[in-house]
Length: 114
Length: 138
Image 1 (cartoon, rainbow over the protein chains, first blue to last red):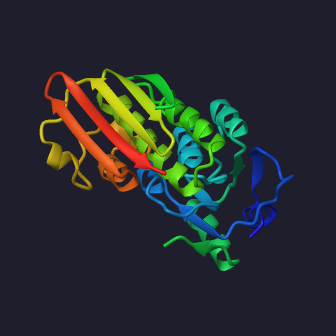
Image 2 (image 1 turned 45 degrees about the horizontal axis):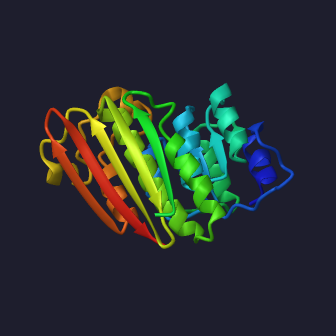
């Protein structure tokens, strides 16, 4: 699923990065537990989270995750945006809850990691 | 060792945790190393940085990047670990509520460092601090 489709399905907006490289994501993982994200062996996945702090972006950077979706109207902070821009990450913000965003994306073909 | 990098890690400062792993990742990417191996290395280093920020007063991280391996030593001044084998158990944690709210402290850090590295050694003195060493070959 392309990033532009993720945006369309979840009524999201972009708060960092852009769509010049509208990457195709195969899988997604939803978690507020960064320790869990750091154990994933998959790359090129979408990370859906209710956590909006700089550790989320650091974790994504280390785990080779290039797109994160903040659920339930969580806003990216300036330091998150700065770090995302530094590392070429895309941050999306959706009004949907983690449950709804995950459900909508899953039913439209974005696969699970586990 | 072809290249040695030193970093200071501040205890309690989570916004800076990740600076060392981020910089080391940039260096490793310039070398011809498999991206999966780079990910394992930087995840281990990031976990170690978070551990120092979460538990210690201060720490020093040294990375020696050679032709076929990287060796990382993280030495901290802090409370130390009473029971290392317990700390290595998945799910065991002494992290504060604050650390947990940031998405860490689930007792997964040290086991994840072990999983992502080829060699790992940990020494600790209660009341003094902990030294973690690990190596990854590429």
